[in-house]
Image (cartoon, rainbow, N blue to C red; front, side, top):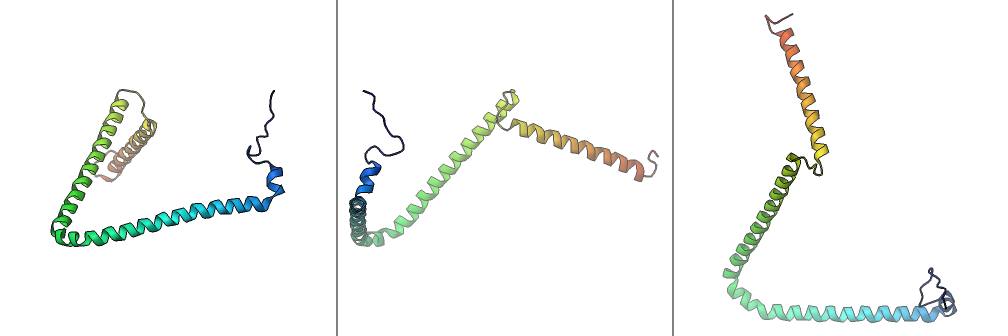
Length: 146
């Protein structure tokens, strides 16, 4: 009762069926493409026509109300932009505070190794600069230890 299935070929078409009548297969593919493309082209044309009609009907209203609509649209745009930016900064601040809390409590958040490495590098450079400054001061300041 077990059926053997060839996993390398589609189950609906065998190699023999497509090679036996390639012209019919090509005609079916072309007809499908023309039908889908034509349908989309018709929908596109209808959408364009509806947009032009709506714009033609709305133009007098836009001209009459433009002294009110333009500042109102600008105000709404600025308000929405301000709220989105404010929310983004709030999320960033909460994320940073959460990361700092995890770092301080020793939970080793992502990036803690890089921060520790940078801290050690800066501390080493600061020690080097301190030593150089002491050496410079000893050699170039009159009355220093020589």
